[in-house]
Image 1 (cartoon, helix red, strand yellow):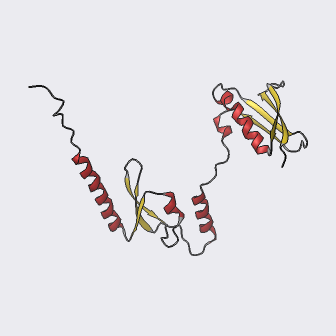
Image 2: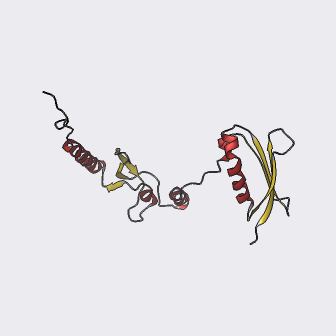
Image 3: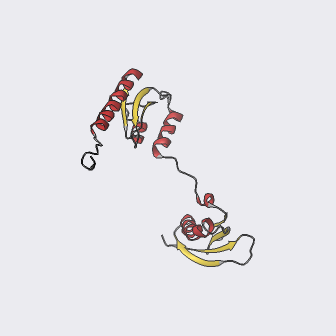
Length: 176
């Protein structure tokens, strides 16, 4: 597929004369929009100059785009839901048997060593997506008591490791 020619103008808000006019070759209008957004982002965000962008296809003027950019928020597109969340919500929507109610106990370990008990709707037989989302998740445990016991064991192991580190000043201290 050949690249289309898109023409564009960039105006300051409420100023008739264009700051910049030009042409850009892209396959789709969305690609042209992204390319021009990259060019103007610093001007809008750092220099605080509100701009209006108008883009249209040189051959087919019905394919066009106009937007005013005032702040950083205007550059953010609609956020895509993560794949695991999307699939889970589809499963919840159409399944009669799947219940998103938290059922099984897990121990979640954070990046900085935070340890927490969580209850998730995870099905070990299906390797549900919640498991993949939280890589540092231990479980499932039969009940809360088993999960708490595991959590205590992990905390004890971490404390033990901390105690073996000796911060004595023996070698450095040269006093009486």
